[in-house]
Amino acid sequence: MSIAPRRIRTPKKRVTQRRRGNTRSDNRRDELLAAAARLFSKNGFEATSMRDIANEVGMLAGSMYYHFPAKDDLIVAAHAEGVQELLRAMDTALEGVVGAWERLEAVCVAHLDNLLGGSDIAGVVAVDFSQLPEELRARLIEQRDEYEGRLAQLIDALELREGVDRRLMRLSLLGSLNWTPNWYRAEGHTPADIARHFVALLRQGVC
Image 1 (cartoon, rainbow, N blue to C red):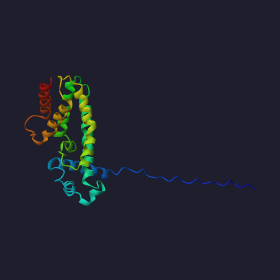
Image 2: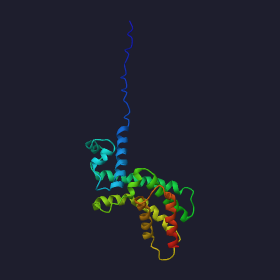
Image 3: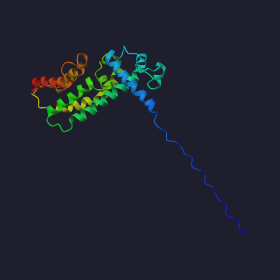
């Protein structure tokens, strides 16, 4: 009598679901960043509380600590996002533009377009951080270094009269651009008009 071979059962593979990103959690984080940037820009860092930010997005104050343990973490994250937005805007603005002054003007137009007509995140870059604790202020300045470094390269490419301090020129231009949200009214000149005017005035004084 023959014996049928024993069928060996192979264990079934355990089907596991791929972990999907917590989309709702990510969305809430983005909402918090946008709200924080908006309130920091409007009221200042010191005058804005974590509760204010939570109320802005309809969240319990305690729930936001899951995303950001402290207000310092919020400003650092929002500011980092704002700088990245400006860097992306700079890259787009420079595409196909030749001429040193034309390139500087294109970047200044993109800068003001983002501060005045872009997202809330971009506006946080123009907030006055001079009264912040030194350690926190240093972290924010470090985030700006890449953007300001690239702006410095654009200014270095300009032909200027002898004796012009390019660093002071850059700081003056950035100061003018970043102060604009404090007085800008939409019914007046467009952001692009203002940026071009700043560059034109600067050019008259340094060439």
